[in-house]
Length: 305
Length: 281
Image 1: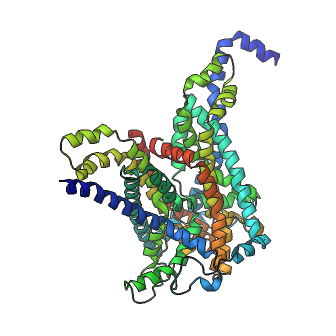
Image 2 (image 1 turned 90 degrees about the vertical axis):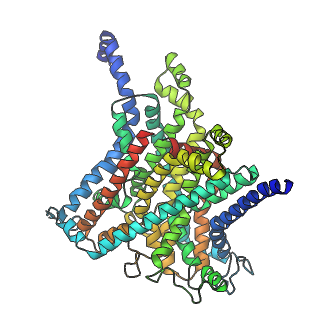
Image 3 (image 1 turned 60 degrees about the vertical axis):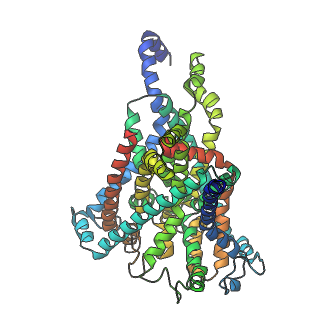
């Protein structure tokens, strides 16, 4: 203690400088430690698993190189899952954006009483607060063959027999996608509403003086101004939707006959139903690589802003 | 002329209200259906023609949950895990955000990229090594396993939200403490934290929401009924009593209640925080 003190006195300036430089590291230390333990280390582990034979289950698991990747790439169900994941994700992103934008525009409309707008803003967000599991069972109830959706559609003569939305190979993927669309638009709505409120009013006034109509104002001012937000949110949504697990697990479980199998359920079943942890790891790395590709664009886009 | 200008304002206004009404049905109908189903008797649920409101309101589904210790335990577990995760996440996030907002240091860029990419790492990718780790550490089927692993996806958002918030506080406020000879630690606790209450509330609500809703890790890293959380409880109920829709809906209502209440209390902070986090981060 005394030594430190005398040292500090001797090289007072340097020691103070060093200490000051260390201060931020002290503050970020807990988070850094957790990220290493929960991110860096597991990433290396899953990569290692994917190159082994019988990871976790075998004591003497051996290194087999890319064998697990070859095995899953030869599995037709894997490629079916890739296609279905893509359909589910792309449709979700498109409709999330369209509905989110429509709701944001409606809520931003000066024609509507501000009180009504603020009440509706709270109500429109509700789907987002529900757990995927709850969303899944709400839609299982509504889309039950004897449920209210079939009743309404039959009363309106849109369909003339009870559709088994989640248990028919023809409709399951669409029904699942629809439930996900319902659950996910509020993030876009909130972000785009904030974006709309940030667009300078004089842009519209100037366009009005130049004789632009409402559509032209929307096309040439609103959309370009919102574009950075749209790209950010859509990229994030793409990444997140690609990884959706609980909604699929709780509505269809990937069935009927793989009709709604997505990459996450495919991977989960490999690991925790078949105990093929090595192949599951290879599949998980595949999902990770696609996510990282999208993340690269996301970070690049964030920096450009 | 008068008629033309009238139709020019009234028609768009009517269309806007119509759009808002359609939106309300789209967003609200499934939720209302869930709520009123939880108050129906099981025989009434698929009555034809379907009715939103029950003929006879009954609390039988709720009573069945409250009288079942297993189901009550799901709720206690969820409150405990989400509560502890929220406290720890907010504390660590404040420290990190303080460094991010007030200092420039070499690790900052790396850590920032790391945090942003953590947001996008698929949970299923982490799940497999977590399973291996949790078993190896001997913490399989414990609260500790859930609390620890949840931090990986609550922390990034919490740090981003908190950094965004701290950036809005003028530096002069905490620099005054440093000029007076106080340490940065004093500045953080005496000045920054008391001023950050709205940001902390937004971060805490969002963290609680993420932790409360988590499914995949809870499904895989716990096994016994007394460790299960609400989402898993609902899943198990679905498998066991596939036809007791009113109980499942009651469970869903109860499972959504804390989030709805928190959101309604904190929605001003929450929306502002979300907008700041997603738009500017």
